[in-house]
Length: 264
Image 1 (spheres, rainbow, N blue to C red):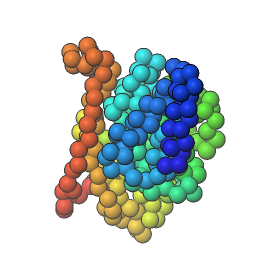
Image 2 (image 1 turned 90 degrees about the vertical axis):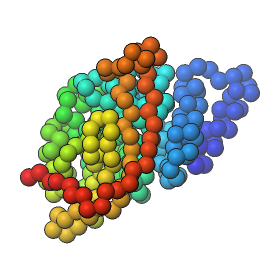
Image 3 (image 1 turned 180 degrees about the vertical axis):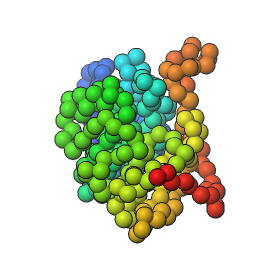
Image 4 (image 1 turned 90 degrees about the horizontal axis):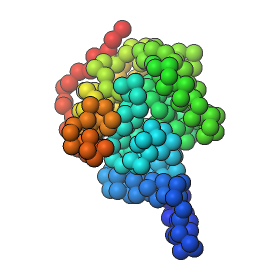
């Protein structure tokens, strides 16, 4: 939280002394607005997560035509049928993991790399797998340009994970899925956490499970998140006129006794 207050002070000083220029300073203000209105106002309380979300430049992970909406509460299409999650979803995942800075994380579904960058700021190492080669190339260029040295990325099958660097302290499947791939469970450290989204692209529930001895899974936390309608892909007429569709988040109650399938 100290970082947030420092940035606020700098922005105030710049405005008094001739006003802040357009560009990065404006984005910094938008990041703080996002943290205040979308994260703190909801249930994001982890100070490390809030600090990182106030610093990682989301506008560098969105298409050029959508930069002005980079810090709005929305999902943004990034090409290839893939999307960039809304800031709240990224912060929620980071908070659920309770990262201390020593963890090794496997992320399945790199996308543009925004969530990867947030995780890289909070953990020791992030290994991320993207199925679409073009997205992998773009994300890798962003990581290099932004100076991330603790991210490894490859193109590969989502179900395969990255066995060479297993076991991982946490595994994140960043897109909705109907089952938990067994190979990803095998690559998870005992007592490690797995986060998946059960449902479809417009409505999914985030499930957190913990791996126990014998590859048994224990449901340890359950949060609800509503995936916002996708911006830039099959928009409604109203969305086409406005150029965006806003999302919202809701709480979900866990369905006791529900079973989650694993696939060999």
